[in-house]
Image 1 (cartoon, rainbow, N blue to C red):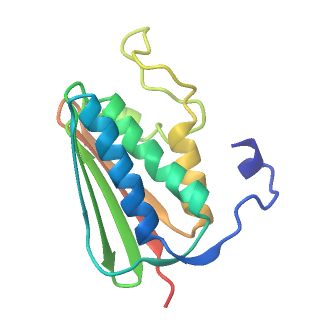
Image 2 (image 1 turned 90 degrees about the horizontal axis):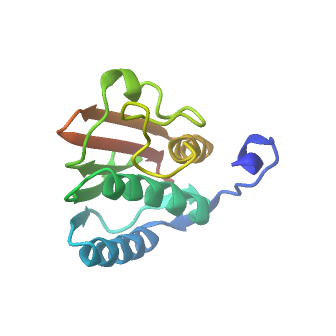
Length: 164
């Protein structure tokens, strides 16, 4: 995180087909969720996802969103959907978790911000994950959007330009 904020170029974008990486990430996450008696399904539409990407950081960003979905869902049911929309790759992660209030959903992408339950943080962390996701996606010239409703779950949508 410090490297991303330092202004140094820690992300080097390279033309790559990101689909095999996303498939591998999903396969591994499906195994992890199954061990914890959760459900994870994914749908990766299209033949390839040619992006200018830094695979390591992009995988970490998506993994962070998936991990949050698992962490904040008592009985996780998580779905990842990826598809091309014009000249963009869209990756959507939907869960059935505890959700986030409108007030907190405006703040969760800030560095060190953590949603509290009274005076308690039920999950361990530093409040850096979604801030990291935002920085990584912006470095990929993309956007992060979130919609959530308390006790009904959350949907995080990433859009990243596809290389022509």
